[in-house]
Image 1 (cartoon, one colour):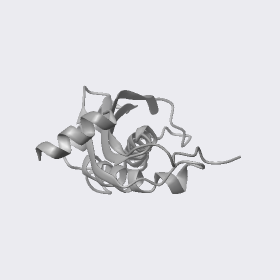
Image 2 (image 1 turned 180 degrees about the vertical axis):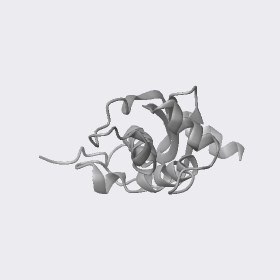
Image 3 (image 1 turned 45 degrees about the horizontal axis):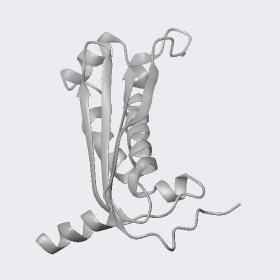
Length: 156
């Protein structure tokens, strides 16, 4: 077992966008909108948690390269009365991509929301019959060629 050897690869601009959703009770969404969640604002906290998680990806995912991230942006949006979406965009100039960082940021944001609202999501037996994290996936991946990357740096 070993990390993939990227020694001979050129550093180029890379970007990945991932997203996922959490399904919550309409009553919980209402509490979020009205800023009545006891633990605080789950949407804002999810953004911070996602950014911090992206920076720790190589510690969390075995064999994942530690990367010098140049940008991490986490967006959180209530889509309707039962769904919150988390989308993460991660950028770097490195020898390997940032898909894992975007996925980890998204997953951590979603888990943070769940943690902050779990008291409202439990049923009488303490279970979560309707709460679900869904559709975590890479939406887009960008990799510039070394030539494009070099031209871009000469222009700036």
